[in-house]
Image 1 (cartoon, rainbow, N blue to C red):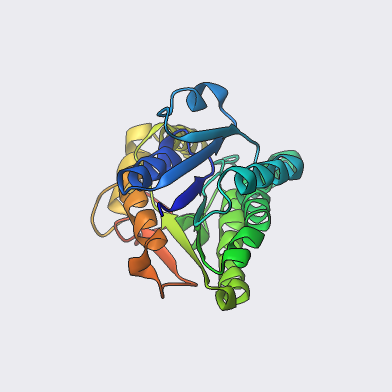
Image 2: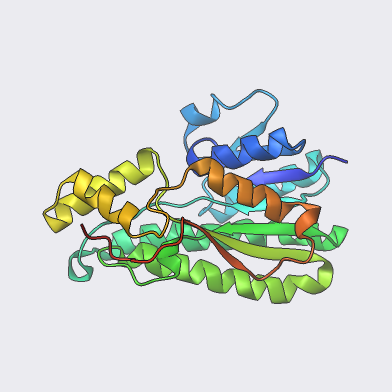
Length: 253
C-alpha cells in the first residue's frame, strides 16, 4: 500500500517541496494550508484542505475526514510555521509573540494530537516536525520564533518516548537559511533591524555555515522522505539539521 502522508503548510515553500518529494516516491499526499490560492495550484492528484493548524476544531475535523477517506496516516509532516517579528525583545508585543508561538508550537501540538490516535491504532507511523537551526541556538532579534522552535524539539523528544512503544517514530528537521520568498522577508527585516543591507545579511548567513551556502527546500524535503521511509525504521528522537553546518547563529559580515 502507498504511504499516506499529511503535510501541513504544504501548498508552498518547504511543505510543497516535501509533498512533491513524497509524491515522486510513490506516496499519497494530503496537504493543508491557510492560503486558498496556493492550495488551488497544487497538483490535482494531491488531496488538499484549507486548515489553520492553530485551530483545534479545524484540526479535529481534518482528522475525522482523513480517518473516513484514508483510514489512517503513515507519515505526518508538521511543517506549518511563521517567521514572527524581527525585533529586540523589549520591542516585541505580546500579541505578536503569541501569534508566532501559536502557529509554530501549538500548531505542531494540535497536528500531532489529532493524528496520533490513528497511528497508535495501526501500530505504526512516522512524525516529522519542522523545527529550525533557530531551535538549536539562541537567536538575536527572533525571540518568539527561536523559543517556539526550541520547544518543538522538546515536543519531538517527548513524542518519541511516548509513542515509540506503539511503533511510531518522531524526529525533527532543522532547516538553516532556505532560499525562497520567506527567507527574503527575514533578510529584509533583519537588514532594517541591524542597519545593514539585504546583501550584507545574506552573506552573513552564508558565511555562518561551514559549506558557505544556503539550502533549498528540496534539500529539506529529501531528508523528510528519508525519515518517513522504512530505511529509517529505527531512527527516532533525533534532531537533524539540514543547514550546511551552521557555525555562527548570529550572522555578521
